[in-house]
Image (cartoon, rainbow, N blue to C red):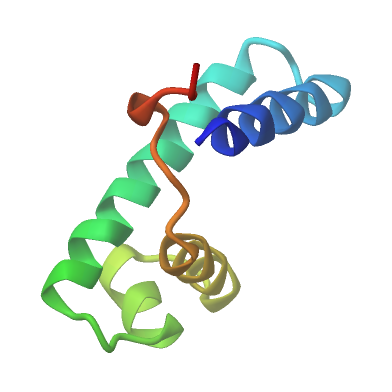
Length: 84
C-alpha cells in the first residue's frame, strides 16, 4: 500500500529534476485522471487491448500500454493508506 506513495514520491523527485516545478502538479493531476479513465474503461471493456484504450482516450498506443499495465498490476490507491 505504501509502495504507491513511495513510487509517486520517487517519480516526483525525478520530474522535479527535469521539469519546471509549476508543471509537476499539472502532470500528476493529468496522469491521475488518465488512470481513473483507464479503470473506468476496463470496467466496461475488460478484455480491451492497447489499441482499444488508445482509440477511446486519444492516446498513443505506447501510452495506452503503460496505463493498461499499471491498471492490471492493481496498483493500490493512495486512499487505502499505509499500514501502521
